[in-house]
Image (tube, rainbow, N blue to C red; front, side, top):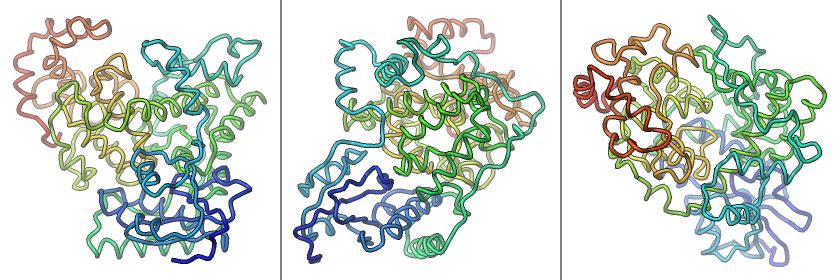
Length: 499
């Protein structure tokens, strides 16, 4: 593979480094590798595979003669045969960094995040063994960067507006009645991607979920359109309704920029700058601006850094609650048969099947909550989340699933399990409307499996959490259940059966 470029510097861009901030003036050429094996080794959502391939191919087309796109079954073969100097920005996964190291590829410092790895390490060291709380990290970053700060104090006099940002959906609403989200228009590249995926299926590659039409940005220009559409039409409603969900409104007031940002098409700094500028114009409330900034500058960076802080074995070796239940077929298949009767689960799985996406409350308080209650095995559950979501990457899902949703790390990340019954779902969504189950019933034919599952979870882990500062009170509630024995017997037979 003699490229006659031995005196030039080639920048290898991987699939989450597709924006302009991953290139520098000294780079003479760009290498992009499309590996079929990367898609064949895991059962990925087809819309995610389509988005990744579309983004890589669009980037190659944009760079023209300045890029080489190689389609292969082995990245190792390509890198081993490449002639000339090659470097890359540090990849976002342990596996890709190991691959780069095996081929002696120099790695530049990470990009696409607000806080560098060195800055996070310094902060963690200064914690002197204390828990690495996201809220503390977020405040540190605000102070260091000056974002939403005035004379050393938070703008508006408080660090976060959580209290204002927990509204349930409007009573009786079917949607938030916001303008339709901006949609990309597929082109010839997307048509070829779909044809190639069809061929891969014929060759034995297995996908899950629906493909198309493409709904997420695959180019820099599209990503900027999505950002502007969000700021113009939904940012104002984002804060108050960020935790609410409606069956007929899969987007609600969310931005849909997580996928393009995780592909590197948007730099988080420009996203924050644009959102803060809109707040300064007075067109959106501070609670929405701060709530969004916290998601990008706080939470996103936080889980990225925990991925490296906890080490490469964090997912596979975390199982503090001894969860052994396999991910059931109805969940793995995204309820393709439509047999799931619990409306919260069926709605969440429907949206993932259709779009490869749901917002964070459906992920955490419906799907994650169910996996926690039923004791789904952590590594398998993390893989399911990673493969099923268009914005799912290893670094995204490690702490989010193992630490936050499943409490499988025993409290390294979150102070308590995020277990909840049907009452929470009834308050924050319309999923209980028309459901086969009732959120206030624990035992019997109409018993809500989320409510019953919550109490069964507490029963199963009563000893562990009896003296836990944030779980002792819920655990004591077990003593008030007159139907405890019947509930435990009921849930022991339900297991991972289709709910």
